[in-house]
Image 1: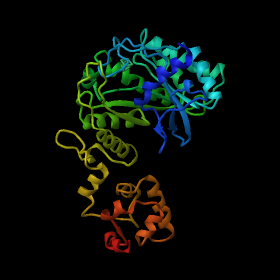
Image 2 (image 1 turned 45 degrees about the vertical axis):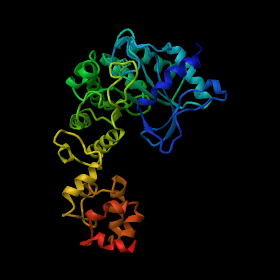
Image 3 (image 1 turned 90 degrees about the horizontal axis):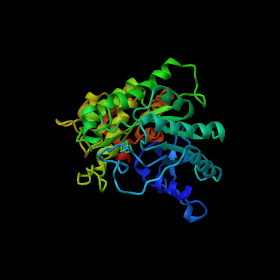
Length: 385
Ligand code: SF4
């Protein structure tokens, strides 16, 4: 198999692995080289700094000695596998980069020969790209279960982002998904190390002037876990290891795995978890603010911020002209940018009508039931529109 064929095999199954923000309105994640037979999967991605790039998401090898119940790459599953040596992958990637086909890479791997050896292969690849081939673009490196602290630190020195997939929110749930992964020492510990290293070396600036950001991923619904469990762990990670982002992947059964007959998770559940996780991370909400049902799930039919406002703000609307930042941001239809715009605008003039809010980019239809403009229910002004 030539390099491009191997890359096709290794990258085509990475669609399900969230790594960076998907660029809005982006086309399907396929980008063709000038010759159709050279098609490789390149994902339109948005980096934390807002830059849009073509991201090659791939594995170094799809051989794996573990047997996670949900995973297409699990040991013993019958499908065509492929492997790159570090130098081979680095050369293929640089060629794609020079042709303008791929501008960055998210590099993961099946586990072959243990987590330490596999992490060494990932590190060698990133090292060749950075130090031999002079690649200055975006690299996201996966930290393998069982990697050592020194390897985590080296990954941080080479990458723009590092991630550890927790897969499940706690030890008991992980045992239902991946019987040979250890939650605390194999998965959570590397995330703790990342934060420890960042804190112990504040002056060190990484390869591009700052330490990499950290993300994780959960398989939603694979272990019958509740949203409360997932969000409890997410809130802990936000606070204790400064997680940049938790990714939630709705479980989908894969043929010829132990979970092939398990019901797929409703994608709307994934969406509600993202909404709730942003409220926890960026909006000052606590777990207690989330509208969990008695068994710990978010209602599918309602946006969690709207559900909170309906319960808490309907009879106590917020005065737009005087509210503090932390209160404004709890109003549906007003996000962090909207709050800043309101604070700036009202330093100049009072905001007296809905058109003024619209001009600031506020989704007025969502905010209406929960706000006052100079003491008056803004809903009274609906007729103007
Ligand atoms: S270790 Fe990773 S690649 Fe291997 S079976 Fe588990 S999830 Fe799949």
